[in-house]
Length: 185
Image (cartoon, rainbow, N blue to C red; front, side, top):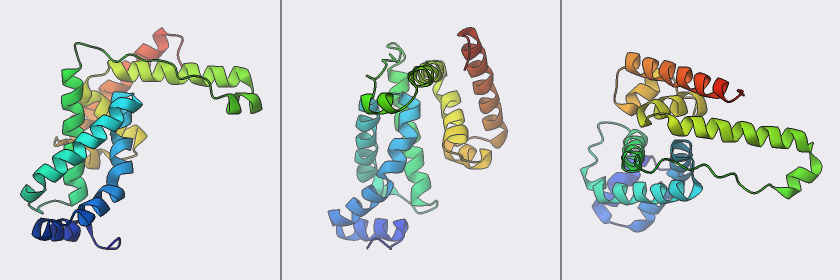
């Protein structure tokens, strides 16, 4: 069953209702879905909750999956819509960045000054990402973090490649300005 194509698993699940088929799809894609969500929300708890919500939406809407696109593309669209809707709801309560406690096992074996500088850089970058609008954040996350081409990211976002180029440009410009204000990375 692990070797079956996603679309075949979807068809079999829709026909039979066997949850083990859906479970195979979840196991196959859960890591990718969470990896898409986390850089958008910058919170482990929110990323976990949204990952669960995505798969609840998938199971609710799987009967409407029309096979005009790949299952992974459909899943990606659900993931991005769910994440952007979450961020829109949360606009009144901006993302709070809290520094994680230090990992003592790493700190003992590395240079403390480099560890502190890396944490500060991560905190600055996370704060700067949190200030971007969801479309700009999605554009930079998909291209710079997930390594998608502009065409792939535009297709996933449902926009023209030119629009996505503009979003990436704007996101980089805003990130550069924000990071240079703070002494930069």
